[in-house]
Amino acid sequence: MRLQPTNRFNVEADPEIVASFEVIREVTNGITIDHTRVPADSDGNRIIRIGMPMAKVTASGKWVPYDPEGEDGSENPTVILKRSINVKDGDHIVGGYEYVKVWAARLPVTVDAALREKMPHVVFAE
Image 1 (cartoon, rainbow, N blue to C red):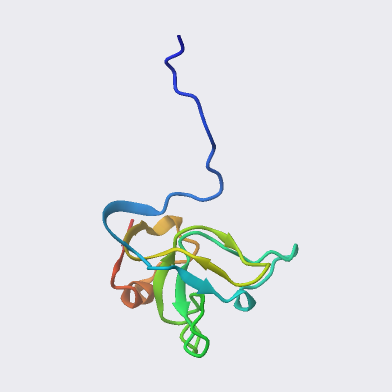
Image 2: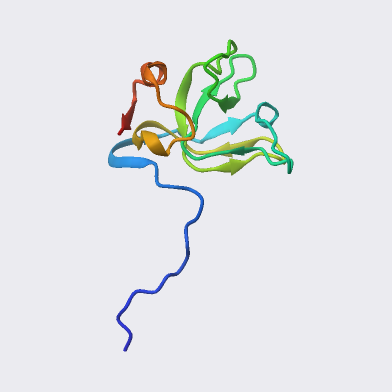
């Protein structure tokens, strides 16, 4: 009889970003990402990585990656993206965290004082 565990699946590419499961609130019904605002790479993919702070564009009501230089709502993030997504085929609805404690070093952006101030419900652990 084999008592050793066996791998059922392998998780690749997406690191665990949640530092604590004590207080988490996810976005109800997800957020709609505006694929036209996500830059394409050389293969045409429009990938947003797990942990990206997301902001709601005032005019469209859709969500885009945080842009500290933005002036259309993209400069005010309120959600942390729950998983990586490729939006090359159009807008997607995905999950996000409104309240969460995350590992700052695992996020795809630099966590500075300005981001910390704009996201008071997110705790950035070192």
